[in-house]
Image (cartoon, rainbow, N blue to C red):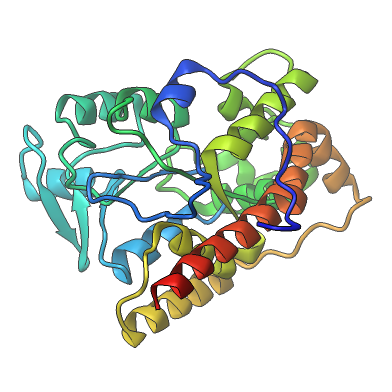
Amino acid sequence: LEGLKAPPALGSSLSLDIENNVEDWFRASGNYKFQKDDVPLFWSIPMTGGVHFQDVVGSCLKFTVASEVGDKAASIAGISNETIKEVLVYGKNYVNVDTTTPEGIDHAKQLNLVPSSIPDIVFSPLLHQAASKLYSRKNKANLIVTMRHPVSRAVATYYYLRTATWDPNYDVSLATMSLEQFATSDLIDNNFVTRFLVNKPGGSLNDDDLKLAKEILRRKAVVGLYEDLGNSVEHIERYFSWTPVSDESINCQKTRLRESLNSERIDMLPSGTTAYTLISQQNRYDIFLYQYVRNVLYPYQYEAIWRQTSYLSSTKN
């Protein structure tokens, strides 16, 4: 990696569940071939492209996915959840577990979800619970995280929750609430990503929390950007050697990403507007964290993984 400067270590000590149960993403050898029993963990930050990524790996790469979908489908179909089973949902394979709730994660742990090697990937919004209970020193997680500008994420959340009557977080009051009112209400997230990374749901944050959040991502996560989702998906696939097996798979991926992103296209708020300022005040640390990923970590990883995998590929030919 001549001439490519790695982001420096930040000196923060990671919690034991992340340190011991999540693999460091970088391999000096550049050999990112993973074994069948390696089950990546996609941390599903709301409104950052996780739903689209799940669709791509399920529909186009034909992966078996552990999320909440299989559990719901199995319940509707009267399929027992006492043992792990694959469930077909609209042509995609899921596992009959729910990895999006604490109770579901506990149940999936009892069923030995990850050691079973049945799922190809796990999606969960509960990073620490999933890492500590579903994974172990023996079965480590390879962590995937996609980020989105916090203001854009907040605006997308606002518009989504105004109409998403099926979502447990739906609030009827949003229908008559302006974006500015939303930004000053109890419904707005306060540094959501930073808090989840450092496992600090309440209280005030400080610069040490931001440093720790950066260090977790720097060492442990393969990162992507919602604003560059197409390239981010290819970057993650390159890392895991998830090569689409046919032109049909490649076209499936491009089509689904394009259609999904077009369906939820929301213009970024101009900086300096009242709503932008109010949302930024609630997400000061998340904005710093996003800027670190966008300007430092993602460009470095993208180039490093591309160089390493390209070199290994050339030596085999």
